Image (cartoon, rainbow, N blue to C red; front, side, top):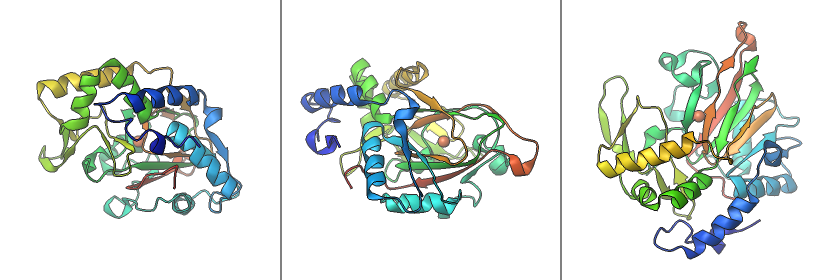
Length: 294
Ligand SMILES: [Fe+2]
C-alpha cells in the first residue's frame, strides 16, 4: 500500500503544492497502463480471502478501481452486494430506484433511457442526479452475459483527471471545486431542483476525492456563470482528448468492476435477438466508498 491519504493529506488543497506534487509524481508512476494490471482473480467473490482483499485495496488505491473475476460464485446481484459488504460498502441507492434499473440490459425501461439500450453512452460518472452532498461514491458491475459484439467500457480514474486538470488549468479546477456548477433538472417537466445541486470535484470527510460529471444534458442544468462555462469547457475538452491514462476493456461473463464511481463510457454494442441471450450486467451503486485504508 502507498498510504497516500495519510502521507499527503493536502494533495487536493489548491492553496499548497507540496503534497500535491509529491503525490502526483508517485500516482502517475504507479498508475496501471493496461487492463491486465487492474485484474484481481477471486476464488469466490462472496467469500474473499484476506490476500484477495488486500490485492483489491492495493489496486483500488492505485487506480480507484479494479477488475475482478467472480470465481465459483453465482453471477447475480446478491453476489455483487456480498462483495460490497466484504469491502465495507453496503449503503446502496436501490430502494429509491426502479426495481430493474440495476440490470443493465436492452430492456427499454425508463423511457428507453440510454443504459437500457444498445447505444453508445458518453463519458460520465453514475448518478449525477443526487447532488454533491449525498453522492454515489462507489460503482460495481458484474457481467453475466456480454454482447454478441461490442459493449466495452472505457474508464478513467477521477484522480488522474484531477491531476490533468490541475496541471493544465488550476483556475478552472478551483471553480469546479468551489461553485455549485449544476443542478438536477427533471427531464420530463424541466423543473430544476435547487437542493440537488453542487460541485464537480470535492473531498469527502476522509479526505478522498469525489467527482460527478456527465455529457448527458437532459437531466442537468449547468450554471450559466461565465467562470463555470469556461471551466466546464476545459474539463470537457480534457475528457474528450482521451489521455494515455484511459483504459478500455470488455467485461466478459464472470468479470466485474469495483470502482469509486470513476468516469466511464459504454461503447455501442450488437445484441442477440433472443431475450434470454441479451447482454446483462448487474450494477450496484453505493453512497460509501471503497476505502483502501479500511
Ligand atoms: Fe454508467
